[in-house]
Image (cartoon, rainbow, N blue to C red):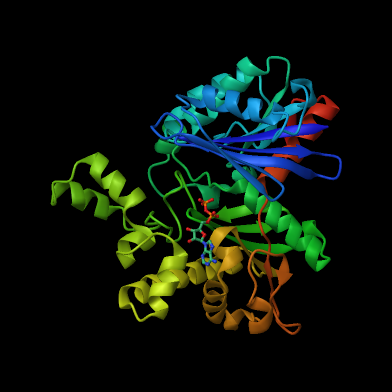
Length: 405
Ligand code: ADP
C-alpha cells in the first residue's frame, strides 16, 4: 500500500509519498509560494532534488502539479494514479470532536468547516487541500490526522482557563494544544528506545521548532501541554511570544492605540526570538551571534532556555515524577547548546547529560549519562509517518475512526 501524505499551509503544500511495505519514503517535496508570484515545486527522490518553477494559483493547482510530478517518467515514482491507495492529511484543529484520526466524509468536512473560527489561519488551507484531492482523485479515501487529537486526553484541570465557565460552555474557549502528532510519535519512540513500557512511562516531550511546545505524557496520554487555545501560548518561539500577561494586549490597545490586527501581528510574527534578539528568528543565527558576543542574542537565548526549563519543572510536578525528557524538531534535534543549557537547570531532578553524547544533530540518541535519574533522548520527529500509519490502519480495517486512547 502506497500513501500520499499532504500538509497544506496557507501558501504551501508539503507532501511525502510512502510505500508502507518497509515504510520507505519514495519521494517528498514542497510546493511553495502557492497563490503568490514566483511559485515553485521542490521535489526530492532520495538525494536528487528537482525544482520546477510554475505558477500555482491555488492548492488545487499545486496538488495537480504534485500528481503530475509523481507520474513523470523521469523524476516520478508511479506509472498510474491508481498506485495511490489513500491520502493522509495533516489537519491542525480537530476541536473537541476528534480525539482520533478519521476517514473524511461529508460529516467530517462539516465539522472542519464549523471549526474554522478556532483555527482561522490553519484549517482553511487544510480544507482546501482535502477538497482538491477529492476532486483530483475521486475514488481515493482521505484520512484526517489532527494536531489537537493527542491532547484531547488532557483533564479539565489542565485544559480549562480560569475565566468564567460560560466561555467554555458557550464558545469552547479552552486549551487545545498542538503538535500532537509529533508529541505522540516521539513519546512512544522514546519508550521504545529506552526499552520501557509506554503505558507505564512518564515523559516530557519538547518539540522545539519555529513553533514550539512541550507536553507531559503519562502512561501514553497527554496530560498537559504548553500551547493552548491557539499556538501562541507557551514557551518562547521563533516569532511568537509564548506566555505573556494578557493585560499587555489590553494595554497595547488602550494606552498605545494599537489596533487589534497590529497587536496580533506583533505577538505572532514579531515577538519571540526575533523580537528579543532583534536579529533573526532562526536559532542558528542567534547562537552564532551570541557566540560572537552579541548581548541581545545571548539574552534571548537565556530567556528561551529558562522558560523551557520552567515548563519541564512544572510538568515533572504535574506527573509526580518524570522518567525521560525528549528533544525534537529543528532546535531540539540540532542544538546541543539549547539541550545542555536546559538540562543544566534540571540537576535537582537528577538529570545529567553526557556532553560528548549530546554533541549530535538530527539522529536518535540517548544523551544522558548512565547514572542520570531521568533519561534524556534526542528523537527526530516524523509526523508524516504517523499520518501514513493512521491512514493505512483506517483504510485497511475499514473503520471510520482510529481512537488514539
Ligand atoms: P517548523 O516549526 O517550521 O516545522 P522546524 O522544526 O523545521 O520548524 O525548526 C526550524 C528551526 O530549527 C529553525 O528556525 C532553526 O532555528 C532551528 N535549527 C535548524 N537547524 C539548527 C541547528 N543546526 N542549530 C540550531 N538550530 C537549528
